[in-house]
Each structure stands twice: as structure tokens, then as C-alpha cells.
Length: 321
Picture: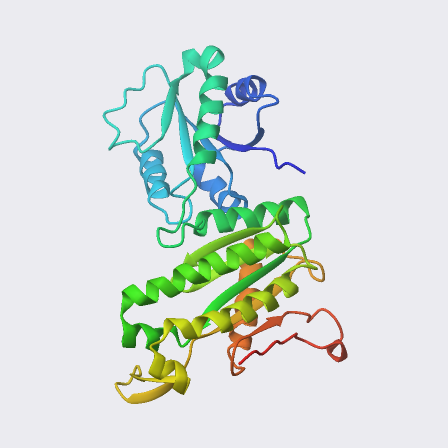
């Protein structure tokens, strides 16, 4: 199922909204709001493709709110398109932070081609993590929320490294970055090998990487990721510490301490057993499961099964030391 492109239209003018809906018919789905402020909850939860706002006169409050939105870490990458009243004069792009604009008198002849071009640009402008090349937070949120909105059943997994900070302290950030690059490639290759189509891998930041798969594929992929990771990670240590199986480093209190080799913890949640309305709810449960996995020595994954009776078991665990 292909998700339709969504354009949020902000205007109090029902005639203008009707015209926009007419001219964009078949190109995208229109969601309308009377004010920009009223639309914010929807945009945070649904991640639309374009925001189209009607600015018929110089309203400092609207301009200020719009500019704040463009500075927001979640909605900052949203493509914003303004329809301006013919009498409106833009003092400068620093004053009005929009990606494109169109005068109202040119609506019929230009809006469809301009919005189509904006949709194409928005599709290409995918935020990526510079270290791993994986999609970042904006795309992660969109992937989760769109699947929830369409009712797709899927599993969301949250992977995190254990004892990565002591490794960075001992070997330096450049070698730590090499570990993260390896982790990104390993998870991406394993996920795509198991599920070439419909899967997704994203990099939240640091050593936090997430992936989305079909419900029956996530556990198998997590087991493989753990096996591959545990066999590869010793090669990132010097021979002496690799042989010993631990390193000595300073902890957060400044005390010398022994730390095991890096392991990986993965938390998994799916919407097959319980309903989630918002991406934040699903991410919170996956984070809980990841923290639960961290309580176990060595690499493992934990699966949320709490909607079933407790006798059914709460988790699945794999250890490979």
C-alpha cells in the first residue's frame, strides 16, 4: 500500500481551501486547519509532507510562529509553502522562513506544478546521519507514524551498545566511530538480507540505532545481529585486551575499573498485540525493553509481550558471550 502525500493547508478562507483542493486533486491528500497553532499536534503526530500556509497580510504573530517551527528539531525539515496575498510584500527571506511561495493571483496556473516540485524536493531531502549514512530522527518518526496511521502491523527494534563509553575513553573517538560505522553496516545488511522490502534502519544518534521489520522477522534478525556483532567486536580491541576479554578504564566517578568488551542490547515492540496511536508511545516501550536487556550480562534482546498472560512469558533472550 502506497501512502498518499499529505499537504496541511492553513487558512481561514474556505474559498481558498476549496480552490487548493480542486487544483491539487489526485496529487495529494489535503488536511485543513484554520490556524497554524491548531495544526501543531497533528503535524507532530502525523509528519505531513508539506505545510501550505495562507498569508494574506503582514501578521507578525504568524510569521514568528512559522519561523519558530522552522527552527524546531522535529519539524524543522518540513517543507513550507506560502500562498501570499497580492498586496503582501516579503521584506526578505530572513523575515519569512519558507521554502517557496506563490501569489494568490497565480494560484490556478502555478500551484499544482509548484507543489509537485516541492513534494519531489521533500522526497529527496532525506536527513541522514553523517557517520553511518542512515536516516535520522525525522525519517524515523515518519516511518513509525505513517505505518501506525495506515494500520500496518510491524515490529520496532531499538539497539544500543553496552560499555561503549569506556571503549571511547580507552581508544579515542576515532576508533569509537569505526565501531559505530560497523554497527550501522551490520544492522542494515542483516535487516535487508532478512527482509529486502518494507524494512527500515535509522540512526537516532550516538550508539542508538533502530530498525523496523515485519513482526515475524525482527526476532530472527536480532539474533543474527547479536551473533555477528559478538564475533566481530573483539577485532576492534588490541590483542592483549582482546585476549583478556576486558579493558581497564576510568568510570564516571573517576575511579579505575575493569569493563567487559562491548556488547549489544536490543529492545523489540510490535503493534500486533497492542495498539499504539503515536510514535512516541511505541518508542517508549522499545526503550523500556532495551533497558531491560541491559540488565542481562552479555548481548541479548528482549521482546515486549505484556498484553499476553504472564505465563506466556515477557521476553525472549539470546546470549552469546
